[in-house]
Length: 325
Image (cartoon, rainbow, N blue to C red; front, top):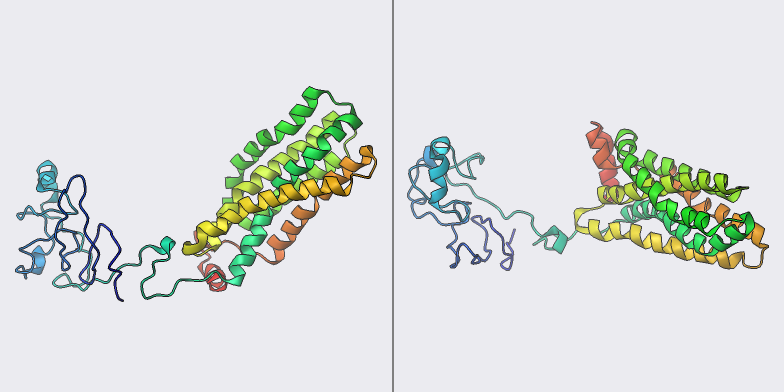
């Protein structure tokens, strides 16, 4: 592999051509030693043919990884028999080191062509991000339905404020409990549970005959929202290639804003309906998106390969990786 001559890093190898840089502790950039992977040249290395002393830090006082020999004073007795960073190599006499795979997030793959986002990865990320639309829809729909709910149920300003603001409180509770379900049952079950909670809450809100039932529905909506928002980015990051992980995780935030727009649109759709019915229809419409999430998480989305490996299901994880890569 042809090394990238413009890459700057702290470690070097024989085939490396990276540029050393000066630091605060090293005003002058140290010379490179491409035979010894410690980053700073050791003049006696090429003359040392004894494999038993290869990489040894005792008796030579040489500098390791840009640090001076004064570090040896602290624990010289403990390090007398230790070897350098290359001790793990199979043949220590003259190892041939290749440039490691670096800068993946910068699309710096050397001669290896960059991994592309597969259609399957895009599909799974889209399905996961759709779950974030639930929060956005709730924010958007309450902007238009809040005053209608107050007028229809004769709520005070304080009651309306508690109803609108309590979502964040319940969402925090849901987010705190999401890790247990997500790690215990898997990411797909986490999506389903979050969607079921949101559907249950929206139905109760749409059918509420008073403030207590309205708040009960709000509780389930908040729990579902917090639960879903915690698992979305986790799932997307675990099924995405490292080079594109940051890009795909942002889909969750984009979906939240799309949901807000959908909530605004619902108010426009029912603007000509009687006020006592319009807000109920607006809330009920919010059950469509989580229903789609349940379908996708059951029939479309695979389980996270990382979770499968954590449960010793490596063969299933390999099948998922084949789909996304």
